[in-house]
Amino acid sequence: MNGGDATAAPAPLDWKFSQVFGERTAGEEVQEVDIISAIEFDKSGDHLATGDRGGRVVLFERTDTKENGGSRRDLEKTDYSSNRHPEFRYKTEFQSHEPEFDYLKSLEIEEKINKIRWCQTANGALFLLSTNDKTIKFWKVQEKKVKKVANMNMDTSKAAGQSITASSSVSTSTNSSLANGGCKDKSSSNLSYDFKFPPGGIASLRLPVVTSYETSLVARCRRVYAHAHDYHINSISNNSDGETFISADDLRINLWNLEISNQSFNIVDVKPANMEDLTEVITSAEFHPTHCSTLAYSSSKGSIRLIDLRQSALCDKHSKLFEEHEAPGSRSFFTEIIASISDIKFGRDGRYILSRDYMTLKLWDINMDSGPVSTFQVHEYLRPKLCDLYENDSIFDKFECCLSGDSQRVATGSYSNLFRVFGCGSGSTEATTLEASKNPMRRQVQTPSRPSRSLSSITRAVRRGGGENPGVDANGNSFDFTTKLLHLAWHPSENSIACAAANSLYMYYA
Image 1: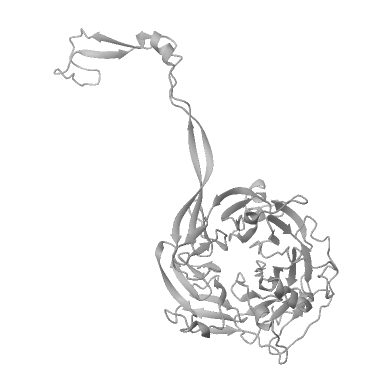
Image 2: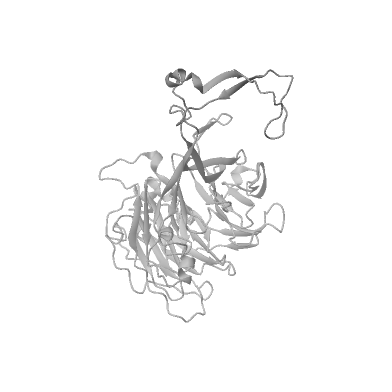
């Protein structure tokens, strides 16, 4: 990515299996509601959230830093060296969304979680946003200490026989003063009730005693942001100001304040006056990681628009447009379909945008709108099969993408539960194919040491691919379009990837 950098490219990473949650046994049938539909690390990398088609959100927490006695930053300050890779354990889960029915439109609303985004933590509590097709919810997950109190009961059968516990007597004292300087109320009766306890106390009476504190995790829905989208929500993204977020559907992007659930501002509207004139829709949107007034959104035509909220209230004009012009004579029936961008992600420093269309990953420099700086071929071997993919609707699958914390590598999924990792540093030829299983290199094939490239002085585009053979996938296996790896996330500070294969969550490290 650093064009003028003469340093040697980093060596390809050696990926190893770390953990799996929800692993299927051989022949086990996967329930539709258990299929994972969203994955997201928080900014610290200490927590991981997944959402599924059943509307549940499952949280995992990192354990290896706690076992080593502190955070990685603390360990680096000491002489203690940790070679441990990130390890997670199940923390809690809760039902985020339920199936609904829109009576005005006679439309069923699925409970499936489309996106999850972590918000800033406060007072030891975790906050996150989750959304289905129509409704966004703001959740607070907090540990609460529940006091466990001993039983407060008295054995009535024993108490009945001990009449001396309470006896009434007539006070014969003539002293009207009390021990603490008070005076008896002379208007009241001289009758008093003296509680007399036998030596050794009463065995049947137990006073309340706090015996222990039980810690339980409680998920509470703080706010519900609803009735703001006519079309299905495809993206939500937090602003770096910690106060606002955006939600995007096919035609509009709305800006919300986390504290206000009954009002949002429409900042992008691509809906034409006549719907017959509609030529493209919004497919993904994300805020810049550090500039709170900048956001990007992608379209079904393969373009990315960068907009500045300071320019106008309705951002109908973009400040920058990123698109790659197709080569003359290369247009086909499938050109527009496979050009549609399914996901975009900013790099951690905000300099680069990664986009995923059906066939490729593209890396864009926000300072250079002439074309992508790198293009990575994900599964070029599928190009002869586009007609079959169109027939079984696989061509409309929406694959996600992610960048490493240092923006030196990118990753995305493919079919047959495969995912690919590419190096995008200067001079890097890294292009690794891995399988979401306990042995990620099981079906690994050697990728060319120097992949094919086409260098243009205008775009500086790098095209990279693996071994390509029509009729089989990159590993020489027959196509399996039913097992697709759509969702994955890269740990923000370490070389660790979490990816979803149906209802199983696999984690790898390098």
